[in-house]
Image (cartoon, rainbow, N blue to C red; front, side):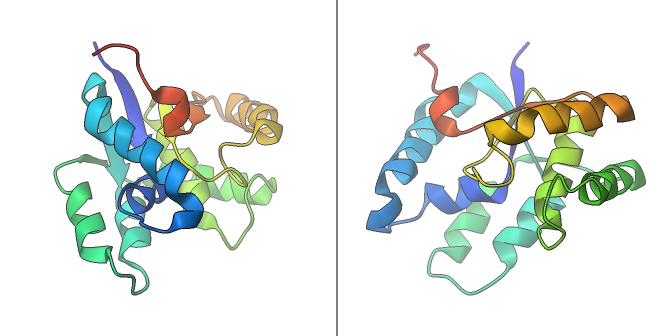
Length: 156
């Protein structure tokens, strides 16, 4: 059985980004997408699509197309309530509720890995213990929150 991966919006954004300032991260994302994603069952939520749909940027159509066909997990009332607990416990900034939803979806559906380039609010070693404590109190699974760099596989 394959491990499961939830993709937040940063993965799709970096996949097609051409800015020199993030060329390395974009390259790692492309490497994982092209050569390693097939080793995992991939998931997103409508929150991922909502974030990708915001704003006006040159690769928007291509970014949204790259998310087509990936299984979507439902944002249930329990997911929303969990995200609200994260916000109430200052786990995520109140203005970035998208991050709380991504974590809540991944936790509720017992996803093995939440894949993100968001170091500030998700893939942050200083947050891991706090996330585990809150999820334990809620009786929830805690996914590994990692970047594509950490999920490159040696299998080919």
